[in-house]
Image (cartoon, rainbow over all chains, first blue to last red; front, side, top):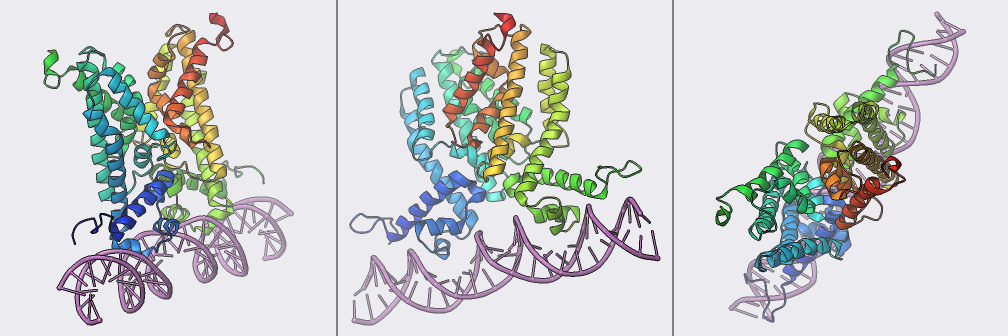
Length: 215
Length: 215
DNA sequence: ATACAAAACGACCGACCGTTCGTAAAGATA
DNA sequence: TATCTTTACGAACGGTCGGTCGTTTTGTAT
């Protein structure tokens, strides 16, 4: 049997514990960070043996990567996808914006920004996890691009507008990208990270190849 | 002998190792965070026995608090004090602003914002350290107040100006305060932290008791 | 030289960590 | 039923951690 389901449609036992472990691990990582994630604590919290985790992931780092992917799936399903499928518009832009804030205030991740914390708190970890976080950051910049593009295309912001304005409008998103930048290899300075964000938004707002219909 | 100095003016042996340990610990904490700070690593990096550290600090938490104080002394001497002593003015405001950025780019704390990282990466630590970080945050807000007050008093910004403008002008300072807010006990949401910063700056810009000479 | 206190050391402790291993139960297949 | 794979378990290992203890070195003052 290679499928995830048993004959009557319920999840296989392994798949059930797999997602249970990921949920628990995400919860603990949200509180204590990916560095603070302890396999022992995850196992104890679930009433499961610690060694059993190694039947699903070959190492702690593999579980950390799975936790990141798990969180990204939640993020995509609950925030990104509804945003991209919705008709474009300023109201929609801010609806998404507010929905993201609501997401943080929801019970799922109470009062914390997981992605932000994951990046902030764990920029010292080894190769694979670090690279994965870099991918997450790139996705984040892509999401910012969509937001800024919407703002310009729909006339909320004129093309050529000082990107600082857009940056501030998307500030509560943008600061995440700015502050997350140090997770990347070279550990760019604060000034460099800020310049990178402004340059990114300037390109979105003024580059005719990005917004050809406005030139 | 109760003084720090020996007869010929050099530091006592204990005081020398004390500051050497603090410098090393600050360097490691800057890279790995206060949580990641390891007494063994500090001792090994200095070629010093780990047990000797307990002659200066009674616990790891005590050393962590000392590291925070040590960093704050550096911060005060190199950034805050020159800013407060200098004649007020917009140029001075931005000189301080830039000096702070230069500080991050200096060799002392290469490419990292220690305060930001200390807060971001270590909001799960126990009571005393957490409380100390809250004090640091309050100091930070005080520094923001000084900057915003300067901006208004010197005519760079009109009294009553939308505090968002001031917030953005001091953004690279302000985001730190915004993002640091979650270190406080109740873990306020992203939206709450942002609202707190804007409210703070609004009070500075409009409250006649804060800027009586403008009303 | 003697005495004394500060300072540093090395060995050791218990706790927790991630990981491995051999084995046993559970569930699907035949 | 018997067979075989998946899944889970408990015990144990090596390692690092923060912290303690008794001892020795170092520096100063008498």
